[in-house]
Image 1 (cartoon, helix red, strand yellow):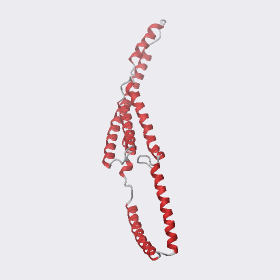
Image 2 (cartoon, helix red, strand yellow):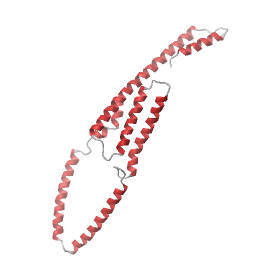
Image 3 (cartoon, helix red, strand yellow):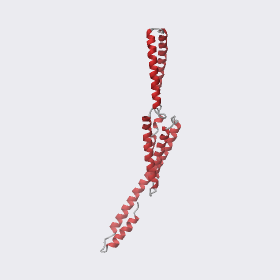
Image 4 (spheres, helix red, strand yellow):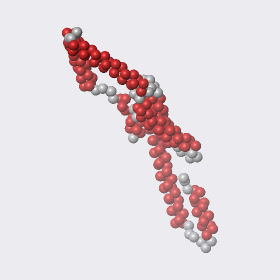
Amino acid sequence: MAVACATAFFCHETLASKSNELIEKTEIWEAAKAKRTQALNVLKDNASGTQDHNIYLVEKIKTDQAFEDLEAVIEKERFLQFKNLQQFLGEFGWASGLFLYSLFNLIITLIRKTKTYYGELGLHTTLLYISFFYLRWAFLKEDYSNWQYILTNLVCITTLIIATYYFVERKLQDVENLLYNIRLLTRHIVKSKPENNPTPYVKSYINLFKKLRS
């Protein structure tokens, strides 16, 4: 489970962005497009000076200008490496939320009086690291390399495995303490008998409660 949770954040980087079939079809399309362009250029040269060609040139100028205006707006709306601010917030939002959540829980874990927190410490530290990894990625001009994703994944998996070990160890300890307390209380209830004076009886239970494991 720990391995699956850690891998879920980075598994997309293990897959190719394009399949072999898509690459092959793209190459075929580009080759066909190049031949079409050559044929179109021959056609335009043959039609040079005609009325139809002059109309085409007028429309081409309009189209080129419209495309330049479109590119200017696209560039204007760009935010860092993203197409626009909306896309940036879509990537930045979940990472910042996870960062604040893990940071809050890490602080609570550290200031808590009970110090059996190694599992929680590992979990919150891992989530904090993952969120920081993607927060930093949001402000980079280029993506991380594959080895950085792999290394980060291995670090997170290792940390979560260790954290899981401490979680299980603490759970087993809690079960052991519970069984111990049940045995202690049962033995005391069977052996002790209320007397006319309840004070010793009450004191015996107070002393017993002090022996219970938390």
